[in-house]
Amino acid sequence: MAELSCNAFLGGKVQIWQPVRGYRAGVDPVLLAATIPARAGQRVLELGCGVGVASLCLAARVPGVEVTGLEIQPEYADLARRNAVENAADFTVITGDLQQLPEALKQQQFDHVMANPPYFRREAGTGATDPGRDLALGGDTPLSLWVEVAAKRCAPRGYVTFIQRVERLPELMAAMHLHLGSLELLPLIPRPGRPPQLILIRGRRGGRADFKLHPGVLVHPGNAHQDGGEDYTPLMWDVQRYGAYLPFDNAE
Image (cartoon, rainbow, N blue to C red; front, side):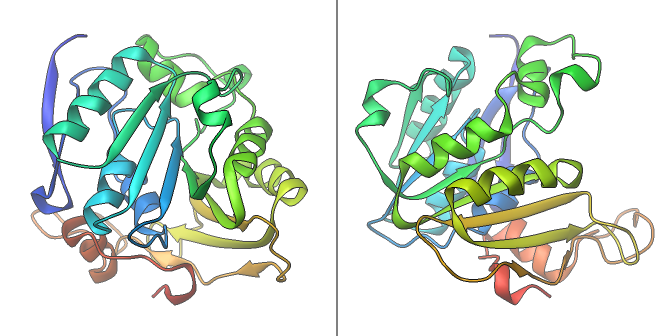
């Protein structure tokens, strides 16, 4: 793989090796991991784990959780394994494709399944020049298959959680409605008065509760970026710096 950098997450609790060029993880997988209500002893699957940011942030927040990741790109899967070792995390990485799920995963079920699928439809824009970044942003696997695989690997009464762009919410909700119940939606509000660009959505295997639309959680406090300041709300700062839990039903 090309040149790498080692970047700190959760205030340095998690150290991640990732490519200098190509797809680089930002805040989105951190927020995804923060919403997973896992407990010690439970098993979690991340579909499309990349270099392992979400999985390792979750493992740092919940000691004793067992995490497995599936990653299609061998170079990224190898980095995820390296990151697991260097962060001393119980994180197993399997190289494979959602569309041809490895047999090792077909025999397992998990208490939680989480995913940060590509945000853009392959046919809707120009691909990135870097292959890793192109696949991470655009991918060929439909969202409906991401949801179907996640639901099948989720244990009864377990949870499936996705982070995605708001434009793709209709197709994501339609797919989740077919396979899961008790759907909950948490919008991420970038700044006061602005519409959400990203959403977090959760469903439960066998759930029967009514759909819940939670109040959006504010990411940045002001109308513009504050140079030299902490440009996050206290809640978002706690999530990113200290690994705080971000519950769907207690957003501020």
